[in-house]
Length: 418
Image 1 (cartoon, helix red, strand yellow):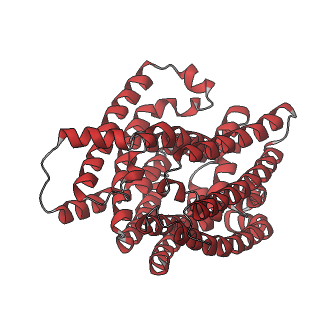
Image 2 (cartoon, one colour):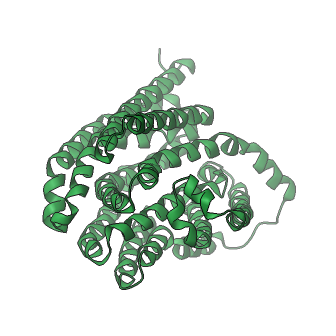
């Protein structure tokens, strides 16, 4: 597991370094309003695209038989294309007032581009999970570096007279560029095809239906919760405010994203290979990782809180001071984030998707409550973000404690510890 983490950390840090180096250029090519519109588009992309395969993709690392994996991938692709078509029809029949009602009226003109983007990103996620199953971490590491590089180039090249479109296309590239690489690797390793077994395919749909019943609504709650700061700012404040906030979120997410994405995938691959029946081994691996990640989270949070205002002012200029203030507020939520977003993946392995749904429901309610209080108290956007960060930090602590207690209970239940 350690070698896999190192490989992905290296790739993620390089990719995030590319993004950091490009941000000063992007901030000077685009206005806060344009960055805000692109951020809103990205939020919708991140909410919708994972839902199109009905979350069956999360089961790809689990089956022992290759034939089952092949059919599971086919199931994901079938669902993705069907739901993409239904999404396109829904957008065709929806008026701008409907989009405005949900706080996303500014992207109404880009709605069909959003459908295409969601389709591409959803297919990318399917083969991404296959890469995780095969533990091809070097392959994944190379892809995420290229994603950041080419995504940033598209954003910069499109920043002259194109409004937010350059940022939007860059975001699409950044979220899906590796599809060709992953798909090529899959086809090369597949070496032949399995006979289509309709009966087995339907059995697979039924067997992994709990991912649809629990993981789909859970992920919807998670995704909406994660994007709620942007959507809240879009609905009740100006698009320039959204631009300042989105840039702060992007900068704060860089160190956390580089670390969390790497450890998350390797941890999930590791506990999947251990198997749900080896409760004590999963518990021990998880406890050791949580201890290290907690210290890391505290360090990242502290550094972000202290340096954010200065970094934004120095690198982007005084016109972006508001982003520095937002970043400082967001840093409070980083303390337990790495640990929580990593260990929650174990619920897929021990088949506790129902509890996963409960966790994401709690997250959604906690964040919604924080913004509701902010709304009725007429808080400024900055004060609203502070309230949000404190709430999300307490939520992450709740997640860590809950999962550790569940894993400990499984160890005692299975009699692995006297």
